[in-house]
Length: 297
Image (cartoon, rainbow, N blue to C red; front, side, top):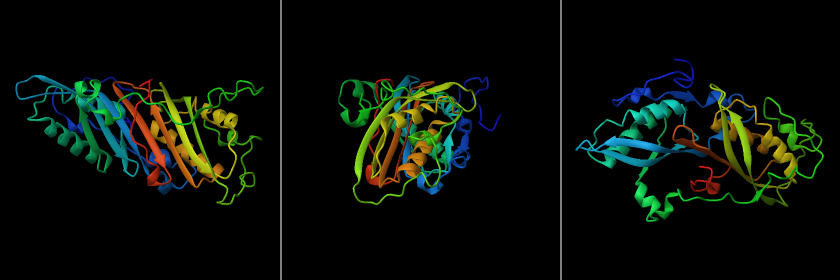
């Protein structure tokens, strides 16, 4: 098994309960590559939605649910996604006395893997689709703010593809130095809300593309150029990074460039293998939004 666990390797799906299948990846593996204080990246949560959760009741009848796993950004580890899929499949032929027993088991196993308390919620499909559970966050939502996907449409700017995210693109002169980051006062702050559906990155192991929508809510005294922000988001297109790392890179770069008094960065990634991952990082706990799903999910 590689350092990334079973991701990218041919595997057989377990038919018995196997919590040891879960594979932990240290968050610091990604955070140590970000030029920012790691402590400032620990306020937030990663919401994982699993749409292929099944087990057996005491009659041997298959049960089905949609699950949400809320992993705090302060956890020591994240869980490798394919190992989570294999773990969930190991429940398919395991009998449980109740839904609560399933929830308790998953909570215990995921919390042990990431070394933090994970919140696990199981939802009945009929309850969601009938609208009797309207506050679950599974109904299709829409990002707040202005879509910047066409911000470059009327410009003469040629967008080049680069290997790694380029924070200098946030500046009009495309040069990032200590002197070019203007120090600003806390007064005269303005709230910006932007989103883009064009976030793309690659899995660092399989090199498969990951697509997502990113939303930014930022309060700063500096002016934000929408075209430059879009160029920056597009610079992730060939970047190899996990979902959580990409969101944290955006959070760190925006913090350094714009020195915001408040900042929230969240992303909704499209589903792969029955699981979607939705990281969110905030500068203040009061900015923490509720979990939600977008139309592409």
